[in-house]
Amino acid sequence: MLLSVDFAPVTVLSDLVDLIVVLGEERELPAVRSLYKPRTTTLPKRPKKFGVVALADGSCGFFFAGLDDTLLRLDACDPDQFTQRATLDLVKNCLGTDPLSTAVGLGVLNAVSQHLLKASGFELDRATDPLGRLDLAKAHHVGMVGFFSPLIKVWGNYPGKLTVIEKDPQFLERSGPFEVTDQTDRLRSCDRVLITGSTLINDTLDDVLSHCDPNAQVALVGPSACCLPDPIFERGVDVVGSTMVSDLPQLMTLLEAGEPWHRGTTKYCITRDQYPGIGKLIPSP
Image (cartoon, rainbow, N blue to C red; front, side):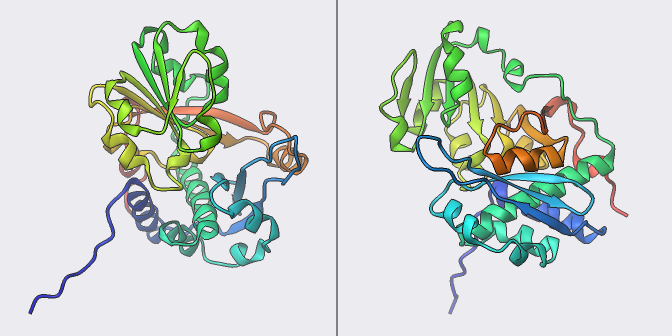
């Protein structure tokens, strides 16, 4: 009699976890030193939804805390429940079912990724705008997965059509020189696609990419996309644009005040054609 065995699907997130675990088992990783929570606020000011994990060597990783009740649980939790655990154990939490542990786990994964990129000597491009890599001025139809307010505000300067894919009902009634829909298959007609890094935390990036035209230029952007880009590039994404921490004390002050982070962070981008892969950057011992 044959028994059926359920296997977890292979996704970008599971590949990221596997990659970090393999690399982490080959070398000593810094411990998790601190967990910085986004400050909760009351209306009319919207709460910040990103937290930061810092390792003992100063490497930092962002994580999105806006799903389910994660923000409230994070605000109430004792950070010691994370800082007293092994780094790789926290990374493995990315594949669990608890939203809070998954969110913090992604922050740890991102912080380890930044540690490895720094250790490899790979120079992050801090001068190029990832949106510039997509050459939006020549786009016929741009698909935006997630509501990117800064781009929305300036979209009137571009000649192409813009379709925003957004599952949050609060955005579906927005109006302007764009269309908002919850139908991901609308991406099939887009020649440029901009995807929020938050698709990593809810593990929906693979589904989004499955709806993209193979010839489209695709970018994954956002603070929570500061991971190793290898599994992302393997799936055809052209550019990863994210954020690194340049001044942690300053960022801590800004997080506690609920203020924008630009004085404590630096944006960067990595392109698929310029990235040799972490295996070549950090050969196995």
